[in-house]
Amino acid sequence: MKAVIQRVSNASVTIEDKIVGKIDTGLLILIGIEDADTKDDIDWLCGKIVNLRIFNDANGVMNVSVKESKGELLVVSQFTLHASTKKGNRPSYSKASTAAIAIPIYQQFLDQLSNEMGENVKAGKFGADMKVELINDGPVTIIIDTKNKE
Image 1 (cartoon, rainbow, N blue to C red):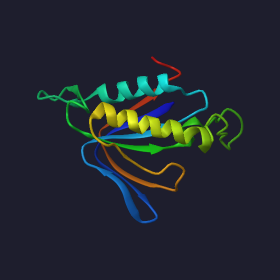
Image 2 (image 1 turned 90 degrees about the horizontal axis):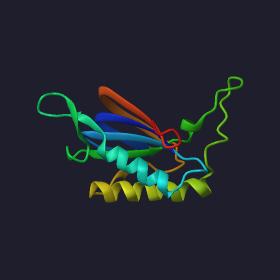
Image 3 (image 1 turned 180 degrees about the horizontal axis):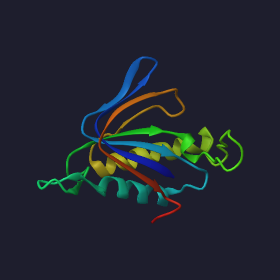
Image 4 (image 1 turned 120 degrees about the vertical axis):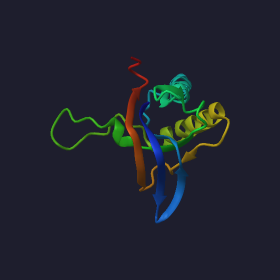
């Protein structure tokens, strides 16, 4: 799994002119799923996301997690995170999972995040044409790949 995590002041996802997910202070998570992803990837990534200390403490130091700060989460599926640009100028998305494989993993990811946060996570709709709006706070953007745990 690949995730782009952005600390936001607010963010929303719109599908066909209807807002389907909206948060205030929290994290916007763009998530890409590949066939090799497992429950272990979901567990590790969810634990990492909810415990990342990227919110400011009383001294203005990034030392507080989204969970501790009572922030919200908005998740958007994004197969293009698995783009390969090695050859030519048209990216290949062959590493991205098909919907049949990705949707159950995506749902497990949402369920696990909700469980770890103790509240429902907002989300876009898998495979839909979505418009994402956000105000990146900082800006703070973290990229995590479960296959490259640095």
